[in-house]
Image 1 (cartoon, rainbow, N blue to C red):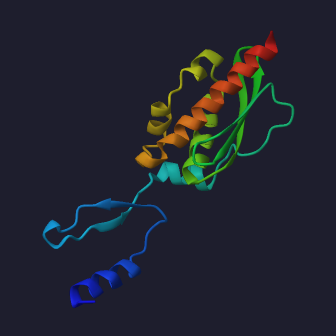
Image 2: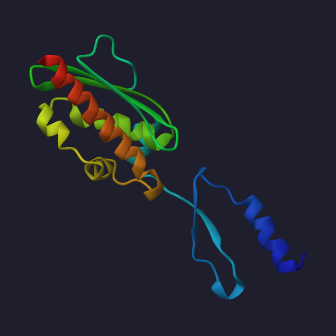
Length: 159
């Protein structure tokens, strides 16, 4: 291994990341690609590491469970008072992004009427978290789809 390749190899081995990386720029003339950590907003980290709404609710008025395409599981539980969500919780088996999305979404939905909660989009959820890395956007989609399914069961149970 020549000196330049050995140096790059040592630099790559010693490069610390937050567990998720992305390829960026580098010096094209040397065919070097740098590995840089993906960053999460402070809000996403807070909701992901310290969720306040995590937990399975006993005797919910509405419930749904979904599995995402990369294997994460999201469950949503709702307690309703008429057409209003008075309590919301979630249980998830997934990454920091999955936890952050579940926690933020249940926070957002609490106090909303069902029609307004159904109108929450993945983009709205991502904005509420001050952004997510692109490869984590499917976590927002999974969370919103699970909430919508729970709301649909809540409507069905009221009839």
